[in-house]
Image 1 (spheres, rainbow, N blue to C red):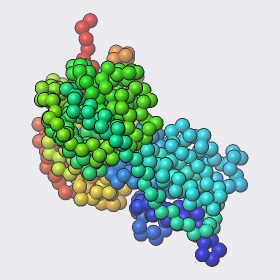
Image 2: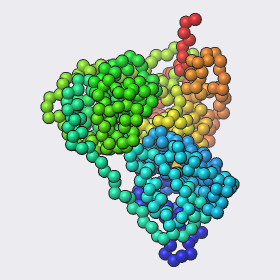
Image 3: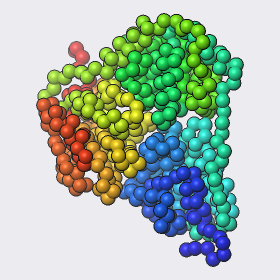
Image 4: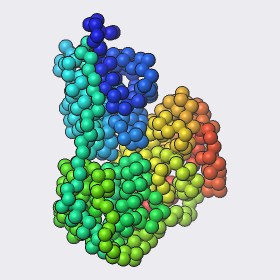
Amino acid sequence: MTPETDGAMTVGQAIVAALRNHGIDRVFCVPGESYLGLLDALHGHAAIDTVVCRHESGAGFMALADARLTGRPGVVLVSRGPGASNAAIAVHTAQQDGVPLILLIGQVAKRDVRRDSFQEIDYGRMFGGIAKWTAELTDPDRVGETMLRALQVATTGLPGPVVIAVPEDVLTAACEPVSVPPQAPVRAAPDAASLLALREMLRTAERPLVIAGSGITGEDGRAALLGFLEAWNLPSLVSFRRQDLLPNGHRLYAGDLGLSNPERQMAVLREADRIVVLGARLSDITTQGYSFPRLVRPEQALVHVHADPAVIGTHFGCDLAIACPVPALLDAIGTPDAPLPSREGWTARLGEERRRIAAPRAFEVTDGVPFELAVDAIGRCLPADAIVTVDAGTFGAPVYRVVPFTPPQRLLAPISGAMGFGVPAAVAAGLREPGRTTVCLVGDGGFLMTGSELAVALERGLPLKVVLSENGIYGSIRIHQEQQYPGRVSGTSFRNPDLALMGQAYGFPVTRIRSVAELDRLPALIADPGPQFIIVETSVQAILPKPGPR
């Protein structure tokens, strides 16, 4: 349906124009009758690629991965009710991961809103606790204002998800032609006094420690971070699942703050006399359950730099709080103007702990291949510009320890721990960066959640490398079950279909690896120019807790 008023446009067309004006060239969707007006506005729109997915959660995960790679909001289009409910996992993941996301939902007709209509949901109530902003666009004349605010909220401060519901009849309603160009970027810079104070703290620190996080993005951001650390001779950790921020083999890379760092390493980290947090949230994982630094006033002098002032000081009292984007701080801080204390011993101790943690372990198992050894083999043969996507689960834990990431290599993993992320993220990466090798590491549990998105890879001819750990259990939950209820297995085992046939059905050549000796095949498979589906028959014994003495 098109508007009859001369010179007018539909609300759907205005939404598409606003997205394009903000540099968005791809949207992900599962079609629904409640937003046909928006799909019609996309018809023949060569500047925006409409990716048709198989499930709304897959569409949402693809949008999140695309946003991580571009820095622009990922856009998801879904239908009302069931479609929006399926996409909720992406909204939660965007909030936890700090990723800009726009979820556009086709709502029931305007006359039926709040009448308990078929598939109707109040999305403000549904998403209000996890989205940065929710809106229901019922006035066609407010489409420009709504889209401007949505795109601005999603990308400023701490990025995150925005949810907009539009009744199906409003999408086809006429509105005045409206241009929604990008707003002038919000710029903030550190004040002179804070810069002087930080320079003095860095100059006099004997055991400084930087924690780098998601506020550092893109190749320029990674290069600026490394230049800052080298100029000031500062060792740095990365926050949860951000290993691709720094060269992992660099002498100043001290490792990551993950789900449970070894106590031996934490004992060394607690000796730091200055902690400088750059673009990371001090949440429970990054702070090891709010124990590093210690609540509420750390023993160490604490500096927190973040674009969103609401993130600073939420749990830990700071000695210096700077609310600005990390790149602005790195650009303004300059270089030391006096000799720095020798920190070689401190840096060496941190590096020793990192190397000890990163060393692949030896295993004595009889039930398959320890997946850690497969991860090690893959890490050693990754191309210099590879993109690695990792699903959630214990199978992926070795990735964060043993793969020696070096920019411009990228790591895309769900900070929220959402299963089902890996395959859709790989599809999105393959679409966005077709000239780079994309390797997806996924467990059998996660693959059976969203593996159907490989249909998009088949349709688009994407040469993805899918490495699937098959062991027939929900490994992470089984580990906790064995720790808390030893010997009482319940609800954590399952039977798989023939995963090789599934890989073949999606057009992938399939390789099964049944022994450690066969891991030698991985370099050639990763280097192959076409798609590969690699099933590793994985040991359960290698991941379960060892029984203690009776």
